[in-house]
Image 1 (cartoon, rainbow, N blue to C red):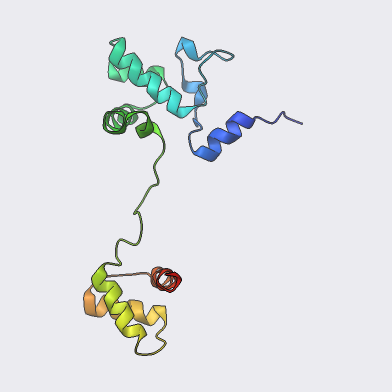
Image 2 (image 1 turned 45 degrees about the vertical axis):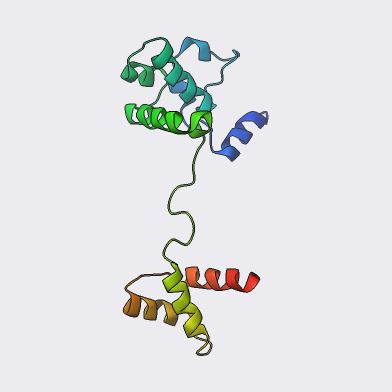
Length: 149
């Protein structure tokens, strides 16, 4: 039975497990050393440091650390903007109910007062009358949040 790797499990849970640690060729990431090629944040930071402090070309630094040039530039911008926390993974996609503007929420509340209109019918009316496509489940969650308050 293979030995459990708690660090790799933790890195994966945090979303920072390097999917290709074998591609990291920097000598200071040798197995058993201080640096861990499985830690993507550490790899990105060292890649940026190598290019910035040691004067390596950005493309060469990206290759040495097993990452692409676009990843280098994204990491560089994130680090400049947010520091070390910029290298941590971010949630992808829209954040929150961005289509449920105050106007749409007022429309929902107005039509909930008319009786028990189902979310699917409400979504159709919102699209026809306001021109906004909202998923029925988003409406259900918004109503539930409103009732919680």
